[in-house]
Image 1 (tube, helix red, strand yellow):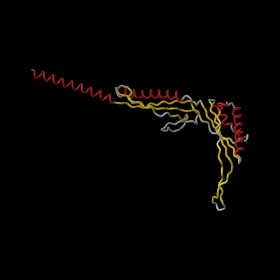
Image 2: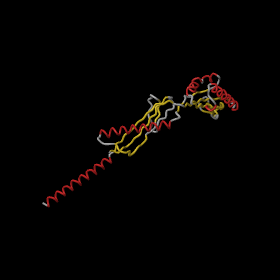
Image 3: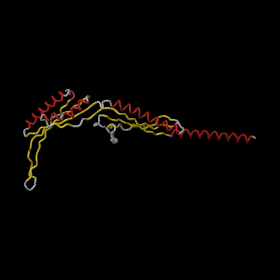
Image 4: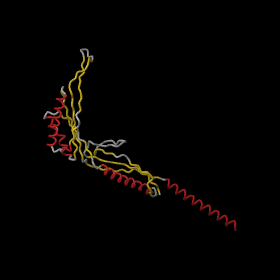
Length: 243
């Protein structure tokens, strides 16, 4: 009888030991399980700052004359912009760049025999940086009026920026993280498990593209400046433990 009791105790001990080991293995397995998800957030916004640049030049054989003509042009441009509603704080004139131009001379056989000085070419830029986007857009279109006044003026396309990118980025990051958590919870629920703590989180690249454009994302991040209406997006990859 005693032998039967001892055998039963031993058997019970083995069962308990296996149960403990099984639960320990199950806990360890669960602890090592991970759900990896990527969250995405996007937001359309309108630029609140515009930067527009134009350049003009003068070329003469005499440096002093060319410089004086260029400064006269600067005065006319400054007056023109003020007349269009641009204040002094919104316009910046660059330093004058000076180049010597030469033309290559050839003999009757087409052999180069030297070069000839053709004059001094002086160039200058004006940049308008403003929050009044419509005003500057209008000026960039109507700037041909300066050409009609005798100024050789070349207008570049405006560039558009947003001054609250930091706030926008934080907002998108929060939404991308929430999106990632929702995805992870769905996966865990459908797998019969529960969602644990975050094991690792990595922020993706912040991208800004033109709204409704077909621009490609870049590895280092796209930063569109040619479109007034833009779309910002960001991703975040998060690894969750499984409970």
